[in-house]
Image 1 (cartoon, rainbow, N blue to C red):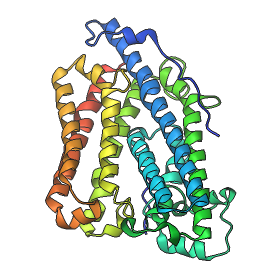
Image 2: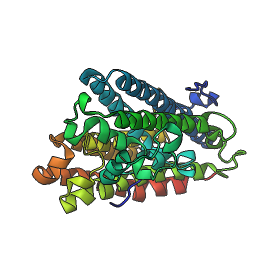
Image 3: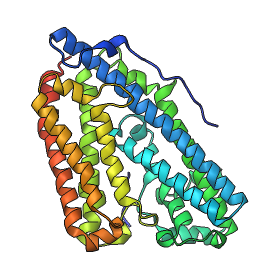
Image 4: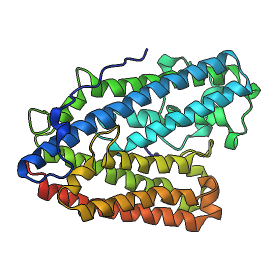
Length: 355
């Protein structure tokens, strides 16, 4: 998500709590405190750990398709790599609704998702003698690592790349980039799932032994902050900057034409945190327990923001020119959602999550 100017380890999910038996509506202080714990436990397990594991698996699959493309360079294998890239992006974009903890502390986000791609610098790199083995990728500037340089290589100009156009050096670079992404995604998952960081444990034990969060309110504020930040990033960054400039070159994913889908998935990520995933409870449960009207309003604004992207029927690069009304309506819906999160959800947390 960072904007600039121009072997897989599977671990059993942990910390499942008996708190899952809490009622949908907390009728007593004891019920509410139990629900507070259930929501953060379910976020750690059912949203964060589950999503990061899915991300790690998707990255390994993408790397496998790139290796196959490197060995057998056909248009069919190129298309499989494109499909795997889009699947990986879907998972990642939904994870961006909770960009706190190791993903921020360890620079996993900018290492994978700095944009836009400096394709002039990229072409210069390919024309040079700089070694492009996997061990060399981490020494490159951020704009030459991660999702977007490899997007440029496998899609070309708006998806016009043909497999036979790929040079030996381009294929080496793609192979190393995809291995770097796979390693970063796996490290991100492990940072939540296992020692020494075990960040899921820091979340679950907030206010009860966590060295990161001295109170439950702190982790709830971190959750709300993540939702607000991605609203701001999408509405006032990813969308507004190219919209105001009418400049397709600064759109986040211009080579694949995937930008509007990326943005929608960012807001689906908000929905995942708010509603909960995989049968677990989410922020909605804690809000509805005290203020059902507020819960209804927040759910409505989240749905409106997600659905607004369905009105953009061309790529975002085209839409900032030909569908400006629809783009503006999406930005308005994101602004409404951001305002509600800042002015309603945050005060709710401050007034009700007191331990």
